[in-house]
Image 1 (cartoon, rainbow, N blue to C red):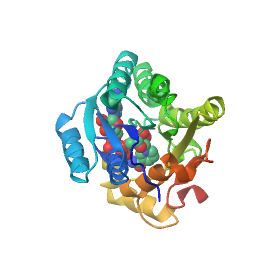
Image 2 (cartoon, rainbow, N blue to C red; image 1 turned 180 degrees about the vertical axis):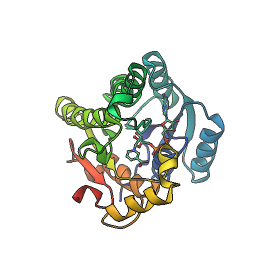
Image 3 (cartoon, rainbow, N blue to C red; image 1 turned 30 degrees about the vertical axis):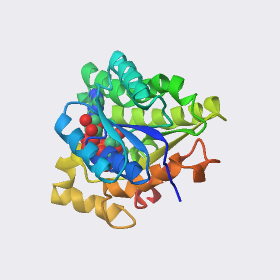
Image 4 (cartoon, protein in one colour; image 1 turned 45 degrees about the horizontal axis):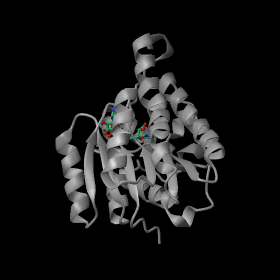
Length: 250
Ligand code: NAD
């Protein structure tokens, strides 16, 4: 089930957190994994070595995902690596949580350039390669905040809402050749929200608000991405799959 042998998949933001867990899961499924990272070559090497230890191929690729030229160069390098690309997972992203009044032009530009435009440009630059695959699939990464608003971080929530509609629009435009789906995680313990989950009060608030009464781990998200890339999901496109412990039920 959910075998990805013979596929080549790029995971952005794969040096840590949710992207890292996805990259390892895809390696476990037999895919050759292009491990994208920003600055931390040491962390990307650790992911590559772990995937190779699982018996799959992997290579690290650096790029600033908010820079269109670097994204284009990234996709060219990944496309040349194995001469094909079958999957793209766009996990690279940042979070900022200021109030509306505190958001300045630079905050807005950085957030939108990284989370929203970075996702779009990654997809666009991957298309020449994905179009040559007979099993092409894309998984974008939204958030429960993409459809369930919270106080603070309007640019982030706007970007994630945009990613969800972008996913549906891409799914219809790229069908039937390329399937496009999103995952929308709830609160997952990673570096992006370290100050939140290390604060006992906030930690407990989130756990209480989550129907399944705990924060998520990156490994809670990865199997769903493996499924969405696999043949078993051949008739699935344009969905936003919430994986959030039930926090969206509130
Ligand atoms: P993380 O901070 O551990 O990982 C983010 C990754 O994105 C890192 O590898 C980082 O290097 C990369 N990145 C950030 N800016 C970049 C840039 N300009 N260029 C290249 N790479 C860049 O956090 P995470 O929780 O693993 O986040 C992964 C994705 O999951 C993000 O899109 C985030 O919005 C989403 N998400 C996270 C949560 C959560 O609670 N952790 C919830 C919902 C959605």
